[in-house]
Image (cartoon, helix red, strand yellow):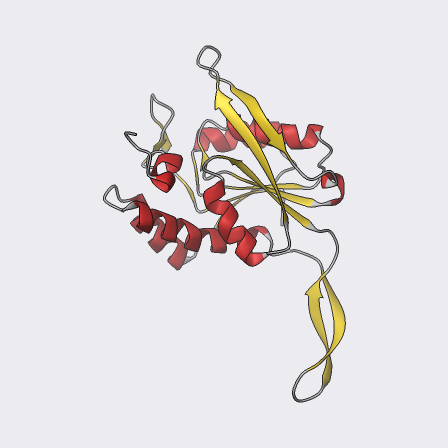
Length: 212
């Protein structure tokens, strides 16, 4: 995978993304579709994992067959919406370790501040995939990845459901060494920093807390 932004434009992804965007989609539908799209994003983000060979016995004969090799994986959820992508990632790699980063926006500076950080101790020897559905302004993603680097991570990828051009520019300028995988780069950010056309607040829609 090149150090760049990859848009997963598979027809099934784009179809499911359209269904997920609809404002009338229920919380249950949103969760189901996010899981399904997340599987595709995971396949793409992990497509170049190293492969080794082992000897096995099939019902027909002995053969040498491929298995995952090399570094172990860690999935890092940016709370709270990142948990929506964490589930499908763990379906793909159940043995992966999990980390969490909690970020909240400071209403005065409008910059993300850290309130929680818990990751495995050996992230320097792992491939670390940071998960956050929305890459809007890019500030939270930049901060999350920087926190990982400060903690010793040196092999990182960022997976999101949607991105805005502004967020992509901010992120790739700050972390040109970290590949981004997304299902769509939308048109722009509005004056409230929402992605347009977007899908609203991913956390609210995922957890059913809109208006709560």
